[in-house]
Length: 210
Image 1 (cartoon, rainbow, N blue to C red):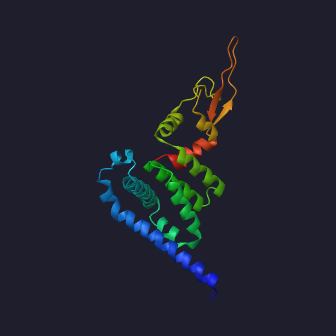
Image 2: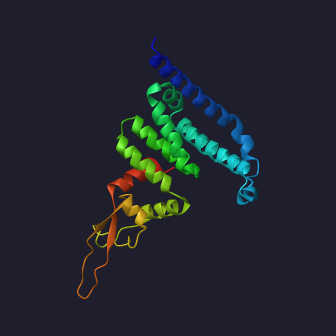
Image 3: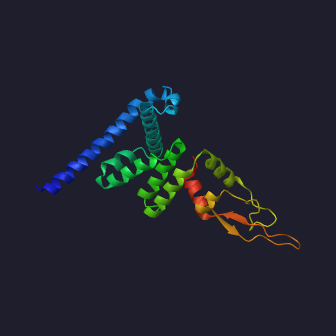
């Protein structure tokens, strides 16, 4: 057996063991960590040890939320995913994405996007776009996104969505909104209006909505 092949197999074995260790550690230590108070005072005083504990807690919490969503949706997904060596690179990518989040809802959304990609419902480029959006959805934007979905269009002229004015610019960059012409009446001043896009509805119904 060539040295290159030996190194490759050792790398794969090490990666598998790392994933197993992460999953095992998460399942067995999350409950204990959750009941401990997070040392915010130590964080403020720049305690390296306390910050490390906080990061570990956050990472475990997010990974567990990802796994729980997988079990609720497709209980065989995690086992199949990590047993397939072709998913090793994607697995590390997902762990990196989870590390950029802090809301459990974000972790659940990342799983849904991952499943859509693995089920060939979206392309890798779309997966990358969705996970990027998810990492940006803090509590404030999450609330605004819910409100955006509930906005009612003008009943008199349905093709115009009058109510969407001055939206959060993030939603425009996410391609959730696009500018549309608004009706002009004698003496009226043109006002920039926006309507929700098909991208918005797809993301909301297939990834965002719990």
